[in-house]
Length: 193
Image (cartoon, rainbow, N blue to C red; front, side):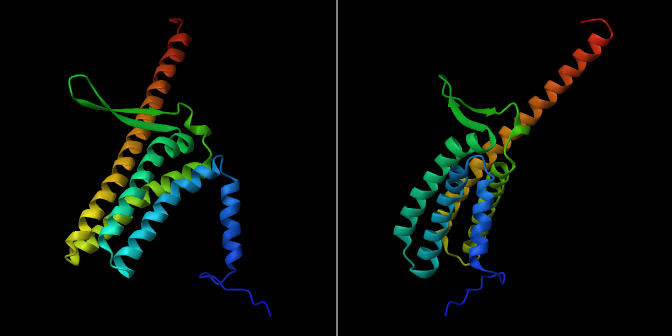
């Protein structure tokens, strides 16, 4: 006889899958939401398998590096732009100096809530997770794994910092716009415009 399997929360695993599907149906860019998390999940599974189950440092390091780089590129160039309307890059000037450039959607209020929540939730959790792995490996004196943890943490932290600065930049520009429009409205009401 068919006996329903019980999930971790005492419910049917199909119900949790249905919740995930329902959540993705409310997203404006469901495929982008999936890929925003997919490379991270692949990196995490490779790391856990290679670090704790198989103890294969070199292959784990190589595969984690490749998929972390793919994740970094995907978040930086695709999911940030589509899910939250933000983009950043590092511009190298002719004199050799570099400058971070930030772009933001001027109308952030019209972003899809599911897209925004998935983007920021995963973007904030990812570097924290790697900081925990880093801390654990330092405590265990597993210095070979510390290098991999630092590298993935830097990838994750750089994307978080870039998008955080974009968002801060967007808030600053929005505040400046409101202030300038407020001044115009006051000047217009006083007959100066």
